Length: 128
Image 1 (cartoon, rainbow, N blue to C red):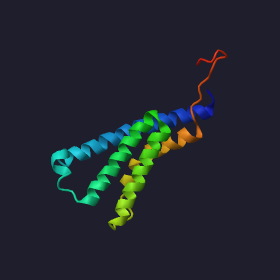
Image 2 (cartoon, one colour):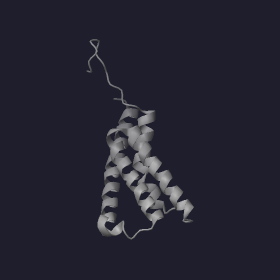
Image 3 (cartoon, helix red, strand yellow):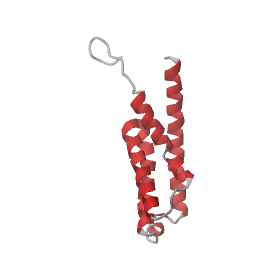
Image 4 (cartoon, rainbow, N blue to C red):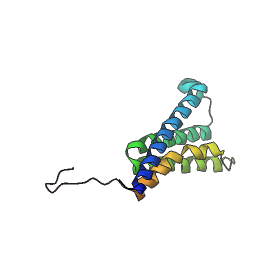
């Protein structure tokens, strides 16, 4: 394992841990707002869409733990959707914390694209 792949592995694990922390943050945020029964009922449509896109960011981050490209793409799509809602309601630019929420998915997406994992195969066709 070269120095470059060690750095990539360390960054992957940092992004994975941060992705779980983001999910926990959003879960506490959701519970603090009263959960599904009250929070979503009293929100306006743009707020509901923003919450939906924040959920996409969170689940994209978690998905990026295993499937870096797909999960990272979902997380980035959620960020674009969230920023679109913020722009359409006149709340531009969004608070920096919302941009930070998508950071793990973006990092894992980039790592998955530029440093794909390679499996070593034996001559018989099986993995080593």
